[in-house]
Length: 497
Image 1 (cartoon, rainbow, N blue to C red):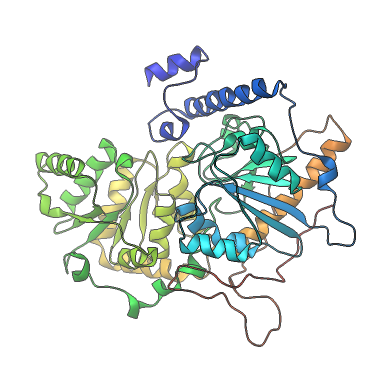
Image 2: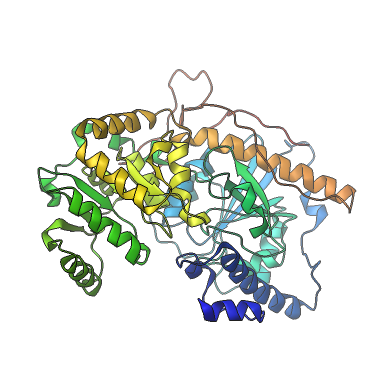
């Protein structure tokens, strides 16, 4: 960390990549500086190659005009390497298909190979403007393809994550460009106008650490597709038994299915303390590489905890089976430096109470955001001592644990976290505001973009059902929780100039 800090002070590109930096106990400012320096280097390379200055853009106002005689629909483009079997596609699928098609025309630009997964098949089938950008084509060529589609608002779903093509955005093929979801923090580039957050992951007193204007979603920044894809989890008759997954029939089962790199020494010591205070309890983890497993078990033995207190589970596909097995746990123990993001919403949909710690950075505050959006802030701890106490108290008080579990299971059908229709309507309100502000900027060069606080439309939990009077009750098909087949129409309308 000292080496990285010295590089930042010397304005050198740090040796650590932005996505790796969010997994280390670095300050918010260090993480933001790392992202900015990496983004600046990439941007300068493109400017030098194009022989351009920082006002460089290839978007063409003529291509943005609304066709005569057709509805004035904003053209929204999403660029991602993860329209495949990936958490991004899993989270985003319902939101993409719930867009109000009378007001928005959706373009999906895939920058990865076709893995023939259900996610890929559904998005290709349901989004007529699904396009695969050639891997061998230059970023500029891909940007020109997007420009020629006349996209008004272009959304970067990768940022500083694997498979990114940030060079496409550096050419500015659209007049408004947004970063969302995959990378928990600022992208750090002048060519991205907005970053989608919420007040928990990005409280307003941390505003200075972002180069973009912020879109503060009313509840949680994260959308999801659970209600449309994984309804089977709500049917107790379809759930497995502990015996089927090698878990003890009696006693508390703590679980954490986060990646190995997120298990820091401090959080592991907290788990050891919890196991010591809760007799006959076990902790259920992903099956990590053998070397890592042996190191964890050795550390536990040194602390007086037998290896039998640890259970390991391998990956399960399709995801519906993973969610079903999660229901077997009693309490989910979150990690600290980087919380469970998709993992966190997974366990909440499975009806398993979590204990999370609200940290000081975006990735360490996602668990708290999820807890608040599901209506259970009591699951949030604010330091390690409180984290251990909450977990132990729940485990030793069966009645409190039962009440918390029942409360969470009921909230799955009413809370904002799983109300995708509510999320997309608020997001569409934000998109309208973005375009309105762009138009103002075109009229007045001195106009300054501001943060956006989209309207919360209120509870809209009829996810997947059309808002018309069709007696057949058109509903998206749940193919073992893996796919949607019928796009929604006639949703609530938002306004934009």
